[in-house]
Amino acid sequence: MVPRIRLHFLDCNLPSQTERDTCTLSTPQLYIISTLAPPSSLLQINLYYSLWCGRIGRSPKQVAPRAVFACIAVTMQFGLRFPEEDENTISRGSITVLFSYQLSAVSLMEYENTRRVRTLSTGPFTLKMIMQINVPILAHICCVDNFKWPLTKDTVVLRVTTRTFIIALPGLLYALQFPGLCNLERLKILSNVFRKYGNFQDLRHERLGGYSVEYNETGMLKRLRPHFEPLAHETLLELGNIPGISRFCMENHNSSFQRACRMSVITKMIMESMRVKTMTSSLVNMKGTNPPDAHQGRAYAVASTYTRVVDAAEYAWLVVSGLGEELENAVSPLRFGSVDVGYQVWNLNELGLLSFMSRLGPDVEQEEKNVAAREEYWNNMAKEEEVEASRRGKRRGNVKP
Image 1 (cartoon, rainbow, N blue to C red):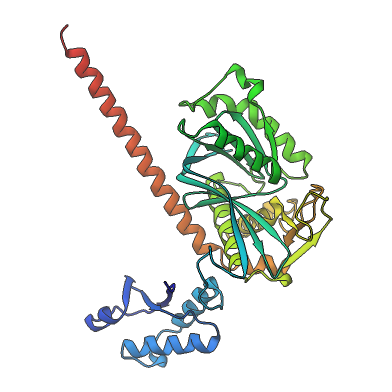
Image 2: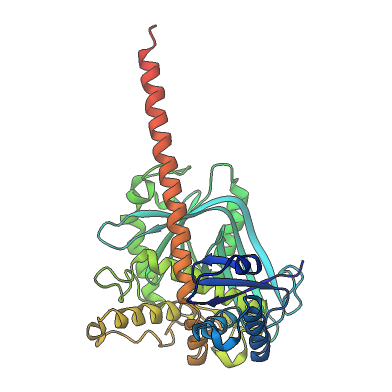
């Protein structure tokens, strides 16, 4: 099936009934046109723009100038390209599923004072390797449902219980958990994949905190965190990364939750750009050499491949919020990571950073809304289950022997 592209145009006037029949009204000031052919040039953008003006019975001069900018911005978001094939049949690169399981959950352990554990997503887990043809680079992506994060050579992965993996990136601490139905052989395969493409340690034999946990228990992450968090931070530091809370988290800006959502979005963007061949050599820097057992001639992503874009977004947000003076002594978010993982690695250069930064904002806002809505739904379901369990307990107590 040929994918459809939606072009968004803003206009200051409400639509008439005729306009409602010819355009899709999303908000009082947002029109959407679906086309079978995504714009591949500025000429096609102008053609779609003129088409839209004709549909609503006005000339381009009568339409607010903002419409032009909205059209161009959304076109940049999708990239100037033709429709791509399905990712399983694409010829411009390859996506290999290294591991998958039908049910999982990923949680975020916040660094703020509350140190809450928040469920970000539940659903099928997949770990993919993306290999692009036109640029000799690799990326490994973890995904629970639609929430994503990268697996890199300097991503710290700790197996703390049979079915719980702690994943540490600069400014982020995740917990990936699987249900009791997931058998040990499958988990062994996942551990081997983490060992090959990340910085993996199996801590089950250490019985962290005196616990020997076979299945996930309520409150388990909170109890075990004081034991695995220092080790995760120490390992990140040894690899040349900055552990713990983001240095750009200030005065209720750039929370751990927002950082996780930004990381998910930039991971999706990089994955998509590699899939559709918009990641070109002009956007990438590579350095180092690979050992004999690695993918020869291909560079691996590192944490800073992703976190530099996230850091730059956090930095820019603080400047916009009037906190620029607080950043005088902050380390530049644009520096190339100093990590030495013993492999050839790749990172975005300045042009690459600008390219991805320009498309980050709207997608992050939507990601935050989606994750927050799912979290609210799960919390409400948990409360209903607690109420129902309490009712059942009371009914049992009222039954006479």
